[in-house]
Image (tube, rainbow, N blue to C red):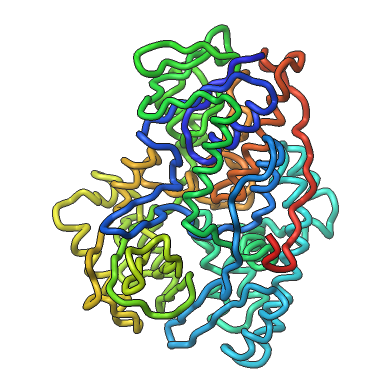
Length: 517
């Protein structure tokens, strides 16, 4: 039995811990916060409960894979979200996208005019080709130069991936309606990026959301964390909440444990679930991983988020997920990624308003999670979100934008709790409040996040800032990859930090035919 220390009890760290414990390792998890979950956080106030991280589940089969690999199904019901999302464009056009893929073209034609459905279908089939190239072959395997090279070996594959084309450029080529181009560009923000710099291969994000469906866990997505924690405990994982790791111990050129809670904890393997930037800049010795540290310093950070948690009197029917688009989407990204970052004057506004009795105090109220894209917390060189009055002024600005777009809730407010990028940094440990680690800017950036195998033997990276990226499905994939790289307890050479076995392959998740879970 080898000893494994996991740094950080976010979903990636917990999923890796469960898989490794099931494989026979003795696993200890350290988490600096008092509760596990990382970005899958929760806030309760006055009878309201809010998920403060991801609000939509896609590819739920990946959760099935995790629990099947660690002891069997969990009591975690999943229900479809229909419509998947409601959109309001700057000209007032409303578009509700249905859960079922087959129903999308007709919904688009009805909302945007004849031909919109056909152009979306062309994009969807193009994205299906991209998914075939990067889904199983790249996203669910350790990142290697050879894997990336294989996508360029065949001219047809290279033309499909088109690393020279951006997501914004792909929309301009395939989507004549500017409203559909605005819709597509939003998916760059799923990796905290600017669509004008994001590779077109990120169109797979929109494909996955529609092809595999939009899903919800009754009681909130935080229940996913609770279920994985329960599985870890059942497998004998030792959890240490409220205990920060101060350093990854490196001896004789390999990871040998951590210093946490004022003591040194020896380990054969260390799995880091913290932000890759934090690992390299704060936890590793200064003379270790200099090249990786320099590369990360040159890589732009993702967007942050400005969040409002609204407790509202009354209930108004509508899609659980709602997006209001601005008139000038490019100006939004200029404000965030420009030379002088600033809060976006006219932002895209996303609202999650789940109709879930478990999340509200009574049936005469509802809670809204409101998110707008925001520049990082960067005092002295960007936006200081702790500056006196800024959070309150921008809160009022966002509420005013919603009102101007036909969703005025100011007279229904019981409270409006604010989470700025500075507060997100304090809660999650992500520098500047960067939700997704690094931005996916540049021809190969979307597939070149820090690798799961760390810069020294015996060290591995898991979670949203490592390959394959952020969001529940990709984080679960990263845990599967890491567990496969480490291998079962007793595998010759694994504890010593050799290349280890290839990760076990699971069949690609398939779309559900309907709410049959």
